[in-house]
Length: 262
Ligand code: OOG
Ligand code: MG
Image (cartoon, rainbow, N blue to C red):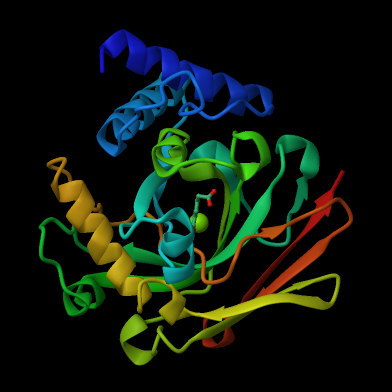
């Protein structure tokens, strides 16, 4: 793909994100043959665009980490994107629906590493050994594509729908927990909307960090220490609406909440 085409498609997605409006997916007719490799080039250009506007990367995020979602998208590899400083939500804060297009939330387990992770064969044990702590997190995803309808390359180019992230402050030592059997439940206005376990994330959330390292290794990059890493949704993503009070319980990891205004 020509670099002018990469820039054009990165701008296409970037403008939609800034103007909070939906666009037709790239593979519809702009570029039907878009490959995964080309999609990551567009994502990298989109990140450069955002950095040129003064925004800063906070940390990486994994997506499509559950068997159900991989099956639905007919793929067997997860994807990654990046959370920016402009996306950070604080605990107990109110978020405004007007800052998004059609947001959904995902309960996730976050990791902070004490050492960079670089290599293609990283084990769960190595991830856990190099983890400083884990924490509860909520990701807000907001696809720029109509009806959240996209192919894998489309969503990679759109920075994996990244739009918001709440990183909880409660830190836990992952070696004293079984993150695979850890349960999570989402309540909205007191009503339970979804639940899941850590095992929904590639069998174990630490495996998600290992897979991230593997994918970044192919680009000559490491998973950096001291950056929050989102490992992927533990349940299906849930639509949020104005007036919602969202409460997510992560068992031993704690709980998080926020409310949604118009
Ligand atoms: C892509 C992002 C998915 C996750 O945790 O699986 C994701 C999407 O479904 O819009 O962040
Ligand atoms: Mg996510």
